[in-house]
Amino acid sequence: MNFAQEKYIELLRAGLSRNLCLTWCQERDLDEVARRFGANPETGLWATEDEIEELEEDETVELVQLAKIGDWTVAYEPGGYQGSRSVVLESLSPGGQALNIYWNVELDSSVSYATDDVIETSFELNELNRRSGTRPDALDDVLVEVDLRQGLTVQELKARTLELAKRISGQPLTPEWLRSPRYVFKITTPLPEPLIPSAYLHPRAPFLDEPQFAQILADPSPAMASTVLKQVISTVLAIAELEGPTPSKVLQFIDHGEQFKGERHRLGEELSRETNAIRKKLLKGTSDVNERNRLDLTSQALVVLLRALDPSPVEAANAASRAALQLSVPTREDFMRLIVLSRVSDAMSTS
Image 1: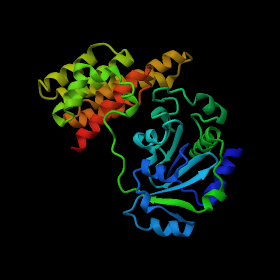
Image 2 (image 1 turned 180 degrees about the vertical axis):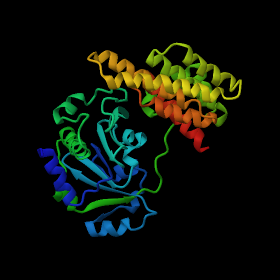
Image 3 (image 1 turned 90 degrees about the vertical axis):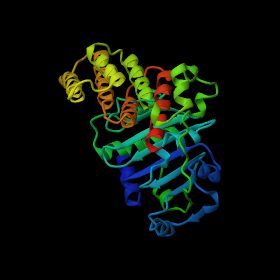
Image 4 (image 1 turned 45 degrees about the vertical axis):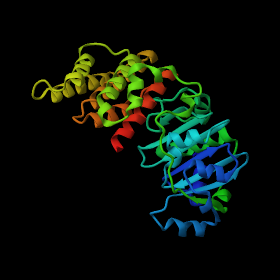
């Protein structure tokens, strides 16, 4: 057992939740941090462990617990998730850094890092090699330092994400901090996801004024679902440099709909076969890193195409855009395109 694991076990014994959302930011005003979480500052109160337990008995209320550690503020949400939302992490990072660690079920845990209103890198703990963001490699040096990598146990992954946060913030979490009083707020109005993150407006990203994008933003309604879907697919095909008959068939299918009975099913089977064939190549292994990355990117792009076949255009746009965000995106502009398309899809699915 290494030092990071020993410290993690100490925190568990002190009451750290196994499922949680922990967020570090360099904003020191606790009321301001609460606002950026969508909490009402007027609900804030200092509470002890026992008092917090009583507050948590009301399951209709979402809480965020704040405390200062060194030059940082840490937000603790046992069983919560607000800090893992990109809009919250972006809002916590102007002029500084913000980091989120989210542990839900074992296969749904992630790390996200933002600076100056922008998510630089984000990744799932079960897919550490597939990082997204405007600078996916932003934390690579620190990941090596803490030895956060594939092949670790769940406990080792969690322990080393806490060590990652310590290296970035310079401040470790301690049992004493966990047992000390914290400033607790009720999240009353969760931050809405803006269709366009503020960082994309100052300066304004040129792609926002492209004719089709401008058309989507002028009417982000379910009526635009097919247009959004085609934008997602064309962006993904360009990123993955994916050509051939299958991508063309998918684009034609989206343009014209099902031309004969069973076409959707047949196209889905074709995509599944191609995806599985690539995954078998990956499982066999290759010493060529570039080839492995290419195959992985192709596999993920095919998954996006598969999601695009949902019978509902709105659901297809939503599923495809979510899958697209799992790609390793080579340029900041491509990532920004996918973020905006994903947010428009989310808005359409809830309208």
